Image (cartoon, rainbow, N blue to C red; front, side, top):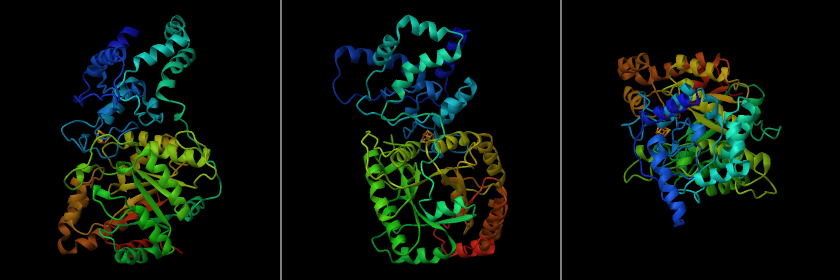
Amino acid sequence: MILQKTSNLLLMSLFTPSRRWQPAFYPFKKEKFARRLLAKTELLIKGPLFGCRMCGNCLLQETAFICPMECSKGIRNGPCGGTTPSKNCYIDETRKCIWYAIYKHAEEMGREEKLLEVLPPLDWEKVGTETWGEVAGKIGKVGNRIFIKDILSKDKGKKTRTWDSVFKTIRQPEWWNGDSDYHAPGYIEPVSDLEKQLQAGEFVVTSEVTPPLHANTGKLAKDIELVKPYVTAINFTDSSSARPRMSSIACCKKALDLNVEPVLQIAARDTTRTGLQSDIIGVNELGIFNILCISGDSAKVGPSPMSNMNILDIDSVQMLWLLRRMRDEGIYLDGRKMKDPPRLFLGAATSPCGSDPGLQAIRDHKKVNAGAQFFQTNLVFDAYKLDTWLEQLDKRNILDKVYILIGIAPLKSFKVAEYLHTKVPGVNLPDNVLTRMEKAGEGAPEEGIQIALELVDSIKRKMGVNGIHLMSLGWESSVERIVTESGLIKK
Ligand code: SF4
């Protein structure tokens, strides 16, 4: 039985369809000969079997025995929401998204729930080095005979305890301590108006104002003033589409000066663990409390010359875990205690209409466990897919643990509709919407508003939806019409 299971597992690993040979990492310093030899042996075996790249921070048991370091962004906690409709990676469309392969594999192996454990960022001191020596050391501590006996035992509890005493301590170092559990926020009083209104059960409207391309905030201030009467808070994107613009922090500060509550977006793409922690303490002092943690569009969709498309220092799930612990436990990632922890209302992005709402829900469940208190979704044009996604969240029992604001955008033209459908990762427009926009001709802007109003109308009544996030796509004047005509006007 065990032999059969093992050989199935190895065969599945070998034939993972998305497999692409990527070079292994090298250690940053020269290791002793014995460790180098062990590392080479490990790569020789784990490379072909699991796609191992020798990250030195092994977590294969939690990722269905497929190495997540094959992900173009090196994300260690689930897909980025950017898969193409055929579930390929949007950065390298010639291969499957490795995370969808991991999810499918986990499903087949009955290890789906393992995907919920919040996995740590890389400890770069270990990158490129072997992990077998560490495993052998941990097994030695348990005792080789006891380890083998417990692993072969029929007592499931004993088996798990012994297994975890070796492998969990390796993949979950003390400075991280990730788990698969939900952690309720460690405070009661809301930290922002957005949180207060959501807690009070109001149907909330947030919007997005595009940061300027230059150092003048005249137009930014005008756009903020235009949207201000109709929304609870305004998001400022963090160089969306990987095109540099005025920073989200600077725009948030401008909003505060104009008495508007901001939502600071932070893209993992341009963030390091050090930068994230220092920025968060700084923005709290400025009065910014709503934080949206996102992966960020890859440099692939940005202008040339392309920036690094490889390996994020910290992914969006890890950002949530780290910030939640900073807030609730008052600690830095390195374990230092802080006197006055930041006050934060933490949000995350999600793509309900991405290629597979069911699999997306697993990732969202993990984000809620990590610390997400609200979701602002990617653009939704397909009410049916939205329902499927909400049902999946309901099955996972998380609808009462996170506030959900659905992303809505007015389409200004057929060209915009086509662009969103074909070029923007995670956004899919159903045929009827595309056809309506195409047929509308010169009346396209009006048709776009009508489509948005119809969506708001159907979304308002859905279980688990707490508001909308209006992304005006540079058409800020449309916010007033959508909010007033749909009866959502802010009192
Ligand atoms: S970058 Fe995104 S789409 Fe590509 S493999 Fe990683 S998670 Fe999948």
